[in-house]
Length: 515
Image 1 (cartoon, rainbow, N blue to C red):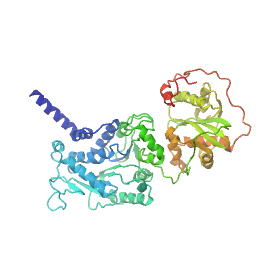
Image 2: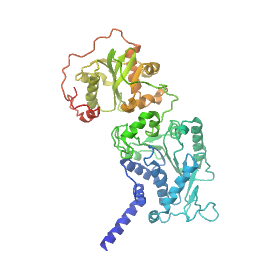
Image 3: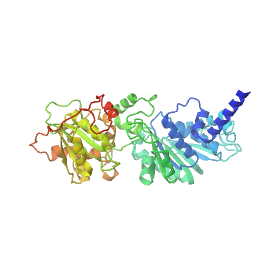
Image 4: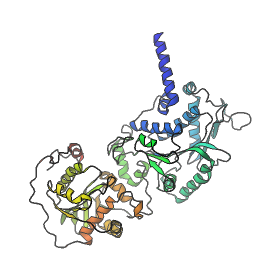
């Protein structure tokens, strides 16, 4: 008897949790969900949306990572349990997919588990196509028996006439890359969103947009141009956001940004390693890096308006007649900027990029990383911009590298330099064929760099490549002196007190001794 009582108590506790929290609700109504760390953050944010704490939410996530399971299957049925009078629309790129989401929600609401949680929320027991005197239940629409609640399934471009919506969920408004890349379809989707969807909303209505991003001028991109959008890095951020502003969440398949409370993966880690390993993702990125950025990273870039047009030059090997082993380094201007340091070999008028340090790590860390890179690359001369404390940084670097460091002040206008030398950069710079895998964030910032200078969040990659071209092509000095530093005594190990063992181990299996 005691054991039976314990089972009953445990069951009641599980039900109470499931009635009040989307994650516990999902665990209660399905037995085969494989929870990952990012799912917990995702469902916590969806739970806040369900309870009205977030009014406008946009989410991008790689395919087959549980995006729609949370947003378009579990969330609507949970919201109907909380409020059976809710009037909700689910939309997708066509009516067939939207209807499938409708049927999925019906199946969930029909289960005994759901009935045990929300007995007041139930559907008509039989299929009803016309309204007559019964509550509707069909593939396009269902109504909550005894309440005002309803769910309407609509494909992109479909009608929502005579419906007032409390919530709309837009899941994948574009079928594929071809649709997302079509200006006609993008404009049609935007017109439908503004003239149909938004006209069905009232002051307290909620909007949830979840889809794979194919183009920067998709619906999410257009909203970002016209409204305030707040990017979530921590759940604590939500407490400070204006509820009438958009909240944006993006989970990258391969982490390229720094650790944050909402996604504590390290750079280079897969989002769901057991199902989509880093090896699998890396191969997909190698095959088509541009589509990978859209499909898996949530980072679409339109080729229109880019400063650097066409394909970048790449190489398999570097010719033997190298005339210079150089480096150009620009320290970070501010906390949101990257330290960018590029090593290169010059052959004639071609510049072969051999290694890149592109990081937002602290000076303590980069004072160890950078000398290691310079020495590994056999750099003879390194040109350091002395702006923003670069001179003192260069002095510290000089202590631990064989390269001679030339510290100079960059007084020319950055925008004018980058724009005027863009053609020269693409003409003379060559990268290794797998450069998008080696230096993912650098590749992302460079290949997405826009002509509209103010539209770029980061200009560090373009700035340093421009500096290399200026030093070697634009203002080259035919009488290059011998640059090698022969005066510094080099010691094995770490002279700065920073433990770089973790970083060093990641650099192609390098040993623990730096020099």
